[in-house]
Length: 319
Image (cartoon, rainbow, N blue to C red; front, side, top):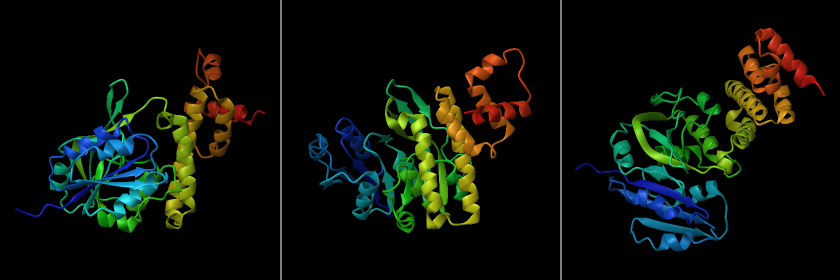
């Protein structure tokens, strides 16, 4: 029988007493036999540590940190203490299906990253397959970093990643709010080989009312993330700067529309002024449609695109 590589399942935990046992269970239930489960309790002050210690399984190692250092720091600690050839990231309130690691390891075929689909599970029970998984990215071969500047391409637990790839990228940067997105950008800069396997193998559990569910908050944090990325040494390349600027304009456009729909015109104006010379006529039209006064004013017939551009500029230029 061929030697099976070890997969390290890394679970950072901070005050996840309500979900940590179920998350660990999804790791324990893997059909793939060669696994280790490393749980880093990141200074929890609830019952998380007690619950983890009650789970008796020799494959589980618990690392308890005295103070909370953030999810990026916790993942880095787990990576340093892991032994696997492959790394499976898993947050303490998410889950992976029993056959995930078996399928991905079996079909790796020399790839550095093997990814399957992910679904979002809402608190009301709704299940929605994530739409952006490896969208516009080479699904079977070397990947380009360009697309990674525009979006976080996949959930943190959708792929397995070779250890050497993580070590070359340098782990997670704790200074970023979207630490996983910035991490994938640095991984993509290495031009790793990606293998895509169709089918949902993991779930991201979404909680309405949380910051991760707030689209405006997320768009603002994406802008902050890319502004920091632009200053990094690895991004000091004319081609990358061009993609970052384009991505920032796209996010600011979406934020402008979202703020208008949320009845926050003054904040919308702030972002529009930053992008008014960089967006298309179609995007002008989308912004104009988001303005309910514009819709009421032109119920009979819509103005042409050039007039819409002028109306938007006049409106946003007003004091």
